Length: 332
Image (cartoon, rainbow, N blue to C red; front, side, top):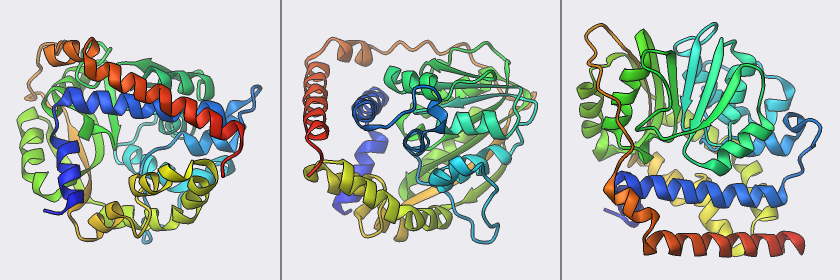
């Protein structure tokens, strides 16, 4: 097992509260960095290219056989991440339906679905208050609502949702609790459209978790090649942004995190140590409905008041001060 596999094994198998905390702190640091660096039009944030580009965190999707989808020109700068959302949402059809995205990040995908694919309502949920604040400011419209919440205890009524969309964030969850919540909030006949990455050796356990949920598998697809194609296509732009907007010590790490060709993450996909999947599930009459999973975890509660959180907070404040200084003095 090489170093990358060891790292991803830790990331994908650490206790859920560790993954949640890490995700929130990453979002917080990134959101604070964007707050410093983005050129946002206060009158029309949606029109700002910086907003569109920074609102998508996923690896993207490029299906050469299907060809490019038609997009509003302002989405062109984020075409491949948008195409991943289009792939997921169009797999079930969302027009006229009540749709929820779990793990919406900074809201780009939810904004695209709400604006372009015609849902009756779009509710987008994320655990990071900083990401939700960004989304509320930059992507709000009449048919989309951004809420803070966690995947394991969704702030939604039972059987209130037609479609749950989940894009590239479930590796941060307790999957069993998340799937139980999906089963609780979906109407009978409703769908979960899911996509994410896993280490190859984790796939049997993932299949077992989906099977245990009682949700009916409708279709599945290995989209690793489409993700690799998107990563290669978007790489020049991402390298440009990283090299011109981040301090030099952070550039290599960010390139690896974003899957730039030649980095360990990209090569892990090429070797299929990492696999990217998309799946669609349906709630049936036989899907068990669990009692609400209250988000009560003694480890999480202890962490909130413990020394680890204080160290994370100090590190985050240092990163924000450092980025502020570098942006004020221009990146060199």
